[in-house]
Image 1 (cartoon, rainbow, N blue to C red):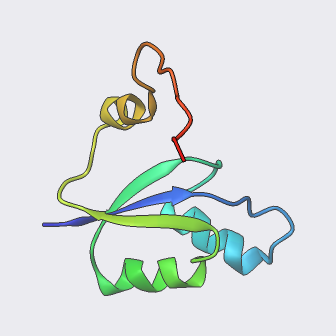
Image 2 (image 1 turned 180 degrees about the horizontal axis):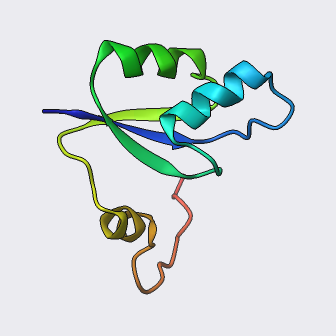
Amino acid sequence: MSYFRITLHRSAIGLPKRTRGVLAALGLRRRTQTVFHPVSPDFAGMIMKVKELVRVEEVDRALTKDEVKASRRPERGFWVEKPVPR
């Protein structure tokens, strides 16, 4: 079974109550919050109502809270960037 990975990218401040209600129904409250829902026409319709505010990916399984947090964490160390020769 595949899942939608939905991340709130833009704030809903100042938007109509109906749009904020769709975000609440999806379980999104804060920016950069990520939720997982199974792929179904119901959730696809809700996503289409707020498509300008969210980022959506289709994933194989729902990640745990710790896995999402680890995916956002940058790798340790640093990189030395060099200019591209012309």
